[in-house]
Image (cartoon, rainbow, N blue to C red):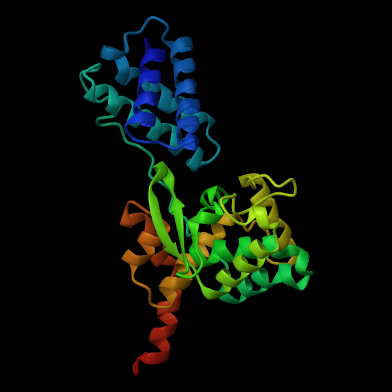
Length: 294
């Protein structure tokens, strides 16, 4: 019964919500863990009438086993979405999460590079020879557009508008958006594409590995790590730090929040507002320099 409900929920996410493969995999994993828990602890329980008891017990189990709050929050969010689906489908009579206190998400400021650090990192590939044109273009586009590493690896050459300085991106849930990129990124991309065989300059994956196939997420992350180490920057700079740096630097230079939200592809403005906390230090310095009574 529970396994079939989970299958219907996953089908709903894939067909009606157009969830990404990564999301479906994560939801499947978390709900499989919940199903295993139910089979072990409540093999004969009717979830339609006793789901509140099951949920409370499962949350207690998660609290005991989770090492970090982030690893605790996702399975809870998945389970809440699952029960919301069951409630809407009429398979349960009430929301088992009603009245249950849930842990709040820990607010962490996003990691980002300063503008000076970013310049050092972006210049590193070309300082080590023309053979690094692909890596130079990859790093520059990541920072210039703020797109996710998965989005970058999915790009094809025809997704680029080099004359207009725009790239067509398919984000989470296959939502399409157009994102601008700068002149330096344009030149790096032109140099990289021109270095490829003529037959591979159009209608091909934009970033290729050494075998001529599409570069994977893992491969792109290895490229980022390689040049972070080479540039002698702080360790643990992930590709997502480029995205954080992109948003932070735009806001510091006066870009409005709505425009940053559109470029990042955030559905909710509150997600983008995380970056306003980062920029308060910048605002304070501007205030101290400009206000006569500061």
